[in-house]
Image (cartoon, rainbow, N blue to C red; front, side, top):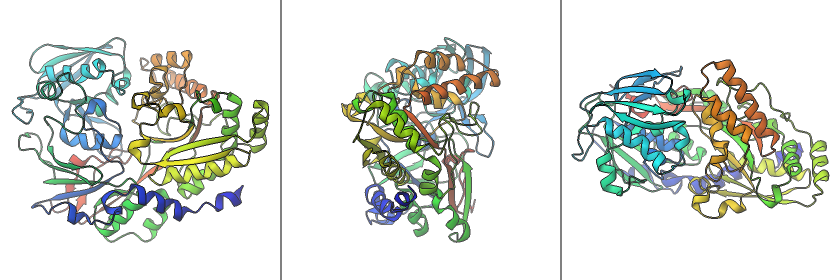
Length: 529
């Protein structure tokens, strides 16, 4: 087994990922030739995803949310720093009236661009209710939200059907909490639906000045912004999906802030680039191997359990992360309520037991496909799993594709590709509440984010109940059982939560991130300021 793992050529894997996913820098075009020089302070950052939409109600990636934070206002926002917390943003005051009612009072004078007027409680109502009305794939973030009652121009009451504890850690400070202009969106879309990459109005400190697919996103100051002045005149965001390419871009000076790979951590520590600050943050991400339970090749639970037991997670962590990442025990990361002490299937697996499950299924010479994105690490994980499954006689074809394509492969709304999906590597972001991790595996998420197509009445019942419980110990017990149910179904093999090392140039910027290393660009400041 170890020989097979060692034969995986990391350099070739990363080279392939860079060629496919590097954006303008990988194609050999210097950033300076693509984006003009600007007067004033400029923030240059690498983003591991190209934008698909800037509509907060229909976002497809956490990386899009990083950009939206600059363009729109929310009732509350995450604080930068090492501890999770939130501050008021568009709200001057917000209070929990009772378990199902939250009253907010907006700050006066927040303007939408394009002569769309001042932000009002009607815009808050529209922003939240359109997500439900259009059955957005992100509506689970609203939990039991029902409607907003408008009391006056600046005051409203958000009404939930049942208590929803994660509203403070998910709904308000994250993606779906962004407030859009009802007038502008209705004029642009007619029905209030997804406006994609054509935002009709902004209410944050920046506006979208230009976007070129697979090349760059340019944000400039919003002249109508009346809040605290942001640190930079421009933010230049370059999509570099391959993390190794992002590291090279940082070394070359094309970007001043980037996430680096864990297997590069030792090198950056021992020989950092000049004037560089390195920070390593605990990650909330969850990386796992998923299995499409509806595919004929994977319908038999014995086949799925054979795959679970054939996978040696510590070997994957050593190969893909140079041993710098943790071994996951479930979907919920360490430090978050509901994190399990250990998984049901031991981390090292057991090849003998895996073969016994295959024999029980009566399967031999099984051929499977394994899909992942081309951001570098997932490809290494896939190749490692390919080698491990070969030990029990399963032949795996690895399909590597760009993140935009991979991100919709399990979604029924995007065509019939989900029917052919078999094995896949998911690398999902999360937030500091267990409901965000667990909500994507419910029955109503099948064909949306639930690519495993896992369905359990008990799981759905626990998921709904857990969001209403304020006692952390009682709430955690439900999430322990839910993770057991996922693992017992055989459709998940939990791998790692990783970590988030970031680098930034101290001569140019003072970076600001959430506790998990996710950048909050509006809180960045120039060193010279």
